[in-house]
Image 1 (cartoon, rainbow, N blue to C red):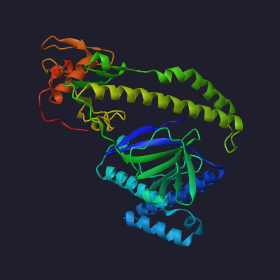
Image 2 (tube, rainbow, N blue to C red):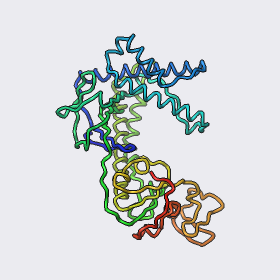
Image 3 (cartoon, rainbow, N blue to C red):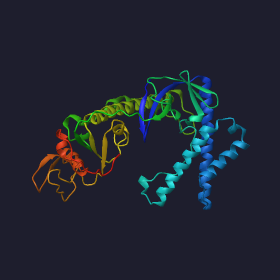
Image 4 (tube, helix red, strand yellow):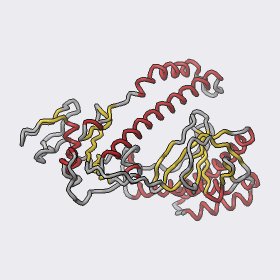
Length: 381
């Protein structure tokens, strides 16, 4: 695949490109990853030891450990210090988040787990380089350690990147993901608002019939072929303790490639839908389920739009006409909402989408073309 996929972060955007590797570059990247993986596992061991002994360790302790390891181990010192330092920082952030969730007594199913061992055959290489660890010259990516990669430029970068992540996906392909300042492309005002509810029958139900997002069924389309590849893997699965055969590896690679294709199709559908919603509406009221393709991206900010994230509690129980709330939660099989107070009847998800607008302090009439009334937002994304 030769694409320049755009992925947003807070104030920045990620542009991801396929890279072509020579045998020399591949060996160098794998050697760098082996060093980084060793450092990560040492950090895990140090963290577990501190937990057992009741000792408190901070980021400075892990940085000191890295410095000492590079001083006493020539194999580590032979690699670049940039990805190693970035890995230690990532470990510190992951560990700090896990400890914070534990101290705040976050439920186990929502808690970030403590960093675990990175086993060679279970994780894919991922190397992060800050600005001082890479440069772009004549269309090629030069990494610290004299590693040169040929990038497949499918689009131009809008600005100089501040960092780059070089990684290998499940299919074995290598990519370079550059972080650049998020471009700003304001759109003309439309005077329209829209409420969005994430549903069961449809991926998204909105107050506008033209912007509803039905399930694209990419997974169902790929299911027969996926089942065939999984049967191939099951027949060729090696016995415990025995190396995998070439046939098993080939079937596994086909399965991973098909999963990656479905993921790309879903992302493409979601992005095109989100772009259409943002282009046609000034203000969006979205159920706060943190969807990656809209509420968690900077697409709205990029185009000068406002997104209100609405808490999902009781959105299916409230009436968008009179505000009354049913006494019991509606079962998923009941797709029509009937208000016992005012007698209003409407599709369940459409009613919830209008509730989003009301909770955001917006005038639902704006969904039909009228400009919404000014009101303070609940929470802006």
